[in-house]
Structures are given as structure tokens and as C-alpha cells.
Length: 155
Ligand code: SME
Image (cartoon, rainbow, N blue to C red; front, side):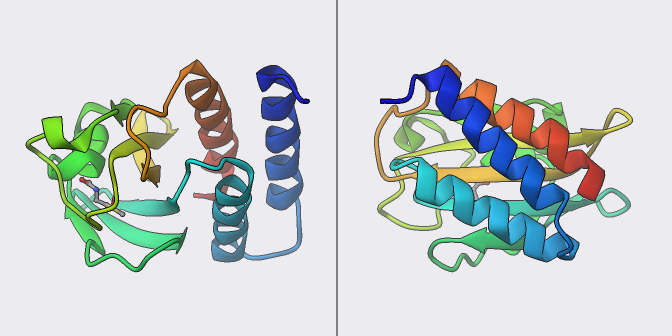
């Protein structure tokens, strides 16, 4: 069985291969979404938002999982918007305890959002919904932090 560290290294290496591939930006973001959803059993919706800094809005990009009505999210609104406003990852282990939350599906129990930063500004976000309560650990933070650092070159 892979240790958490080995698994993180393996997934990060696959993300590097996707970034270096010949596909366009959205195909690469879709491939990373699929990779993460396939590899981590408690990742039920994985997708990217692209920041429109002029409008202070997040625009839905490639994703895998159920369709969402939240195709544009203002900075400050919901978990995604709050992560953009504070420029930091936002982890909600139990969405019932978060009042500033935009619901996508009644099945979602928890959410983790990582901003993708470039020169101190949020250029996008990686958003993950889970149907499991309190699933996120240091492993998710290590994995998603590394991935978002790499993905910045695409945005
Ligand atoms: N729940 C998010 C909205 C986006 S969906 O999870 C895809 C939020 O509160 O910002």
C-alpha cells in the first residue's frame, strides 16, 4: 500500500505530466479534475474557477461531478468567494456549520477550496466537494497546495 507521501508524489508527478502535455488550458484543467476525483475516493466534485480580477468574480471552469448553478461567484460570497477574498485556502469540514455557503447538492457535507496565486493575486481556484463529513487532513493540504502552485503556470 502506498504511504500518503508516496501517493502525493505520484499524483503530483501525474499533474506535472498533464501540465507538460500538448493539450490546451481547459483540457489540462479537466484532466487534473478527473485525476483527483479518480484517485481520492472522498473527492466527489472537483473543479476550477477562473478569477476575473476586474469584476472581482470567479467564473466556473472545467470540472467533474454534478452540474452546478454557481457559474459566477462574487469575491466574498460562499466558500469559494471567501477563499478568494482572504487569498488563503478555506476548509469546511461540515458545511452545516458554515453560514456563508452556496449549496450545489444536498449530498455535499464538506468542501475545501485552494486559491491559485500569481504575483500575490488570486488567478483561480481549485474547489473540491465531498459527500463525507470531516474528510480533509494534512494530506489534502499538502497535495492541493503543491498542485495549485504548479497549475499557476496555466492561468
Ligand atoms: N459551495 C461553493 C459553491 C461552488 S460549488 O461547491 C461547485 C461555495 O460555497 O462557494
